[in-house]
Image (cartoon, rainbow, N blue to C red):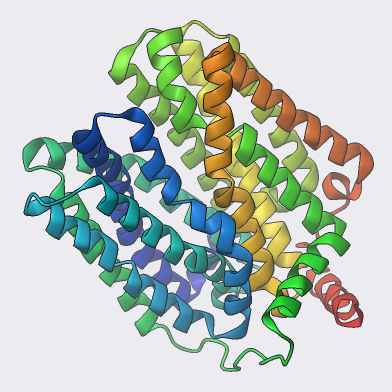
Length: 421
């Protein structure tokens, strides 16, 4: 239990992430609020949010090549330092009253561009800090921090915006990255070898990551499953306001409770995996989490009782984080070290990069058919794809996980296959 905390470097990393992630969530509230104040237009507010994810969709595969070519701590020092600039600029512009809408778009695109390189590098860096034995635990602890921050950060931001205004949230987010930078600088005894500098061109190295994901059925199918769920079953920020206002009729306070319930479920799921990491490496449990996740979303789409909706969202949040964290751990464990950055870039693209597309399709379906139908159709599509994967590629959800005691042998075999191809 909590084996990742045995490692000093990971303890430093986690402490830095706690501070910076709270700051990130504060800006997540402040940025759309400022956009709304400037435009009073819901579509333009959504455009700002989409701008943060568009670079991830386009640039993640190229970022994975960089993550595999250079020392990951050095790359993270670069990205975490760069993260300081956009919120600091937003603070200066909003505090002086000179903020304009186009500036928010530029800041969002800049943050998204930095995130494109940061996410796959940060994911692939975890195994260097804790090894494969404690990887599931590290992923679960990171998820716990993310979901706890999703409750703490917005709460602090709401109080600060009401008390002193939006600019302070940008400033606090900017300085929060100092903790992450300091944590990286204090690390020691990391792998000393520099990743091999391959002679192949950028496109060839990019193609190697894609080819591996296609040739390894478990990795490829898990990436597809994550992408489908992200597209069709993870659009809470798009659909939840509509449920609160038009379906359940609980207003803004009810909307907050709905998000909090799902966030609490996600936090509970992450903590479960942190204390019992073996749950996260069992492919059969992962399949059950996917099935229950789909069932909970379908029940939520049918519910017109607020309490029942809260319970089903808690269950959905629990299953969502259980499924996603298990996919992350299994993909990283199976993937050879020299390809991990490129494969985790594909993972980031599947989980985060498709966000704007998912939000668009959910919004369009909600406009045509209503929010309940949009939620039900999305959940059905996601469930159908998982069922197809189970039938067409049984080993994805039925074979013993490669993160068991034979992980080292399996990973070595995978590396040899990759080298031959």
